[in-house]
Image 1 (cartoon, helix red, strand yellow):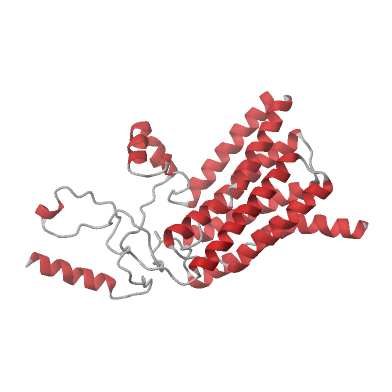
Image 2 (cartoon, rainbow, N blue to C red; image 1 turned 180 degrees about the vertical axis):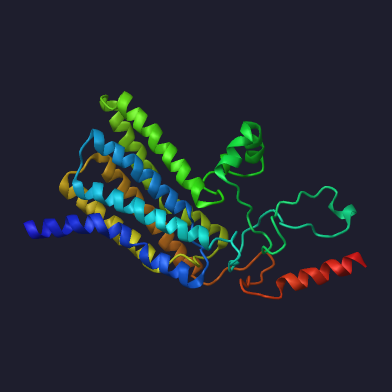
Length: 305
């Protein structure tokens, strides 16, 4: 019995981080992170940072603490890979969502009077999201943030920044804030309980960003079946593990919610399939069309004439 318990503890610690190995390999091979929501990385990293501070006030099992540390490390690596092969990089993606155009439709000034150019160069594919650094976003102030909300953007472009350093700066700031709060409020049980519920509530939303991405694309392309299987069976295992080991109620509620959302993503896999999605015109987007820039240039020349 002790051997089974030990193996279960090891599986609980190292199993969840290993789920994303195949996803990372797939992105590197295709040189395209489209289809996998990098918000998944954000949810896991933030939730597990808070969970570690929760452990400082309520010492849950060591395997779960090790799991949090390993998940943070693995997701930081996966986030770096996603950013390197994102749609905003020179390696174009296989598809794109509706975005603000990145270059003027015409060289004629009369046609661009009310047009706001947002793309850094004409070498980027159409509909590529323009990312900004965290410092640049914060310097714009709340007025710009409110305007962004009206345009459908996230507050402060949260977790959609340019450059890996912006994400590290945010996470460092989060750790500092939580550290200060821990010193001032860590002796109060209500604060520790709140930390646990916040951490595990965030973690319970893990499949939601991927669910939304699949729904918008009407496809599960780019999201590995192995990752989905790891989510479903891993969360089912965690649910049984938490109830058998008498873990805190926060862990049990989170595990049940995760299984429900995993089932929803699994249903999407059956309904949508894993074929590359199509753009708004119903034509499959080709990520490696070398004639794309040339055809747009010919179109602009005809308009000038």
